[in-house]
Length: 279
Image (cartoon, rainbow, N blue to C red):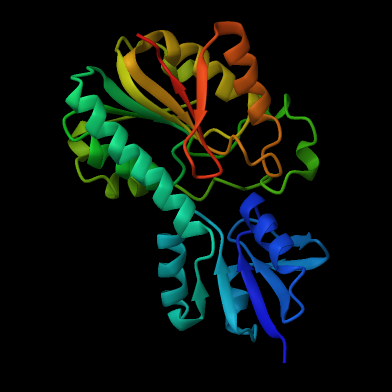
C-alpha cells in the first residue's frame, strides 16, 4: 500500500522534494501545506496548515528552513511528531547556521572589527542567530515589516506567477522579532524601504545577511553595504540558488559581482552564496 505524504512548504525546496518523490512508486504526495500560499503545485493542492487536521497522511515532510517554528505549529495542532520527516530542511538550516557560527569564530580570531546587519528580517529566525554569535556587536535589522514593496515588485519578471506573491512575509512585527533576540539591547530596528532606510547610518560592518528575495533591493543593499564592509568580512545572500521561487535575485547578485569584481562562494546549504570583502 502506498504511503501518503504531505509536503510542508511550497517553495523551491518543496518543489525539489516533490520531484525526488515523484519517481517513487511506493509514495503518493497528497498535498502541500504552506502558511502563506494556496492553489496548486504540480497539480497537487496547497492547503493552509489547519487543513492538516482533516488530512489523512502517513508522513509530513518539512522543507522550510524555519522548521523549528513549523514543528511548534504542528505541536499546537495536536499532530504527532512521529509523522514528521526532515529530509532537507534541517540539513540546509543547520548548514547555514554552522557557516555563521564558524565564520563568527574566525572573524573574532582575526580581530575583524565592525558591526553586523540583516536586511530582510521576516520573523527574526536568522537575526536571532546573528545576535547570538556576535553578542558584542550592534545588530542593525532592516525590513519593511509589511512584506514586499510595490517599487521592488515592478522590477520582477514573472512576479504574477511567483509562489511568494501576495501577503507573503507580512506575518511579522517588530515586537515578534525583538522577542526572539538573546541580546535585544544590541539591536537597532531600521523599519522602512531599502535603500531609504540606510539614510543616516555611519558604521562599518564585518558581517551582513541579505534575505530580501527580490532583484532590486538585493542589488541596492549590496551596493550600499559592500563599500562599508571591513576586509575579511562578507555578505551572505540567502535564496541565491532558489531560482524557482525567486528567479531574479540571482541576476542582481551576478550584476553586482560583475560591476565590482567581488568574489562569491557557495556555503554548502544549496541556497546561499557568500560575498567576501577582500583585504
